[in-house]
Image 1 (cartoon, rainbow, N blue to C red):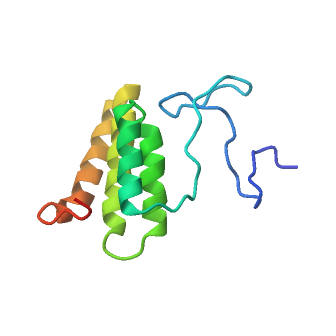
Image 2: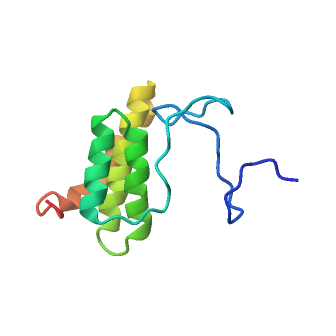
Length: 123
């Protein structure tokens, strides 16, 4: 029998509580609520929710919001959302003290959003 946490569809999902930077905590610990996965938001809702999370010092959670947009978007803006998710993960790594991971993700994220610099979508 597989002992990994599973969602209702049988996909592996880690159900351990997490701290404010997304690090797993022991089962039974009080953690920070995670952002629900698979939520479809308008671009404006995505940006507002992610910005609120970033302002609260929770870039890992902002990454989850951007990741939903990335995974549900087809077309040219897909790379914008991926880049924003990567930037949020880069900030997460920086706050966790992982300088190498932070630099790698921040560089990748910056590359992915660069094509949108001249005409930024969604304001």
